[in-house]
Length: 137
Image 1 (cartoon, rainbow, N blue to C red):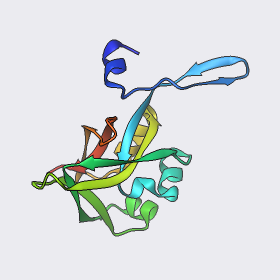
Image 2 (cartoon, helix red, strand yellow; image 1 turned 30 degrees about the vertical axis):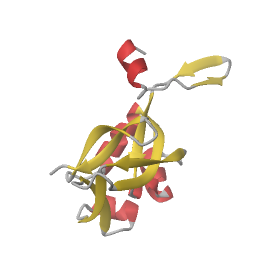
Image 3 (tube, rainbow, N blue to C red; image 1 turned 90 degrees about the horizontal axis):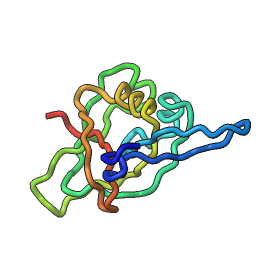
Image 4 (cartoon, one colour; image 1 turned 180 degrees about the vertical axis):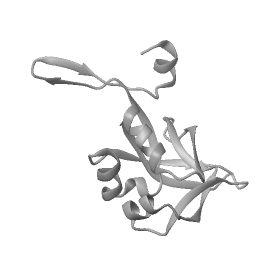
C-alpha cells in the first residue's frame, strides 16, 4: 500500500491464512443505495454475499431510472432502479450500505451498472471515503 492509499483509506489490507500461507488482498469501499444490496445481485455479480455497514451519502437524492439492459433486469428482477443525483438542497441525503470489495469485484460492479451511472469517489457521513454510482448526467 503506498502513502496515497494509506492516507485516503480507500484501501484496506485484510489477510487470511490458508494452508499456512498468508494472502493479502487489497479491498475498496463501495457505497450502495440500490440493487447491489440484493442477495441475488451479489451472488450473481460477486459469487458471494457482501458484508456491509449502514451509512449516508449527503447532498444527493434518489430518482427512478427505467432499466432496459436484459442482463441487469434478470439479475435485479426490477424494471426501475434508484439513481442518485446531486441535490440543490443540502439537507437531502441517501441511506445505504458501505461494502468492502476487492478490485476485481469493483470491476464486476462496473459491468453490472448501466451507462446511466458513473462511479465517483465520495466522503460518506461516517467520514469513510467510498466509491458510489451516481447519475452520469
